[in-house]
Structures are given as structure tokens and as C-alpha cells.
Image (cartoon, rainbow, N blue to C red):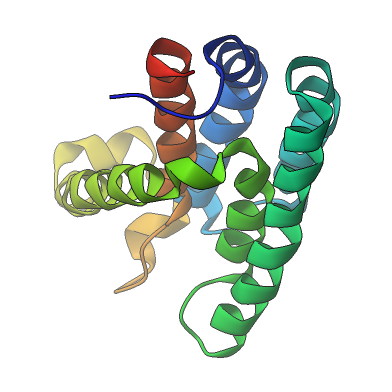
Length: 166
């Protein structure tokens, strides 16, 4: 398995993006919202760290992912397919992913969703719920905190790229 993101670049991006990914997962579980500050922080990580670790043509090309995914996300949000925070996080995460790795990232996200959804649903029906009784996601009915899958999916991709990258 070879990923297009250079291993060293992925490692540096992982080091700085992982705390933001965890923040996104925790915040979405707690409040059913992904804070704009987290999205801006993720973009800033790419702008600063990406500039230092990626070749300039790749760095600039990947910035286009942000714009393209933001337009798609705004449309998906307007159609009621996803929350605005989810759309903004996906756009902010876009530059971290090499275009050639997009199918791998989709598989990672699908696997993360298959793990996160039942984990969340089981946890909210178990005594574990008492550890954080005020979390909005326990009371959200059919809504699911997508940040619980999105953040870890980006971190996992970067970890895999740090291990198997170009």
C-alpha cells in the first residue's frame, strides 16, 4: 500500500493536526457542533506546516481542495445532507489529502463511520453515558455527531501516510 502524501510531510501534519481532530470529535459529541475555531485552526495548520513540508506545486494544488470541497459542502448543507460544521471541517481537511489518496480516505471514512455510529449509539444506552451526562449527542435523537468520525478519519489517514507515504 503506497500513499501519495510524503511520509515525512504526513508525520509533521499529523503531529499538528491530531489535537484539532480530537477537539472536533470531542466538541461534536459534547455540543453537536464543530467550532469555527477548530476549522480555522486546521486550515492554519495546513497553511503553516504544509508550506514547510510540501513542495510548492503540491502545496498550492492541495489548497484548491479546500475551495472545491467548501462549495460542495455548502451545497450539501443547503440540501440538508450534512451540517455546516461537518461541511467546513471536510473542506479544511481537504488540503491534507493528496488527490490520488482520495479513494483511500473515503474507505477510511466509511470504516470510521461503521465503527463510530454503533459505538456512539451503544455508549448512549450504557452506563458510560453517566461519565458525560450533559453531552448534547446523547439527546440528539436520530442526529449523529459526524465529527466523531471525521476527525479520527483524518488523523488515521495522516498516520497511515506517515507510515506508507511516498
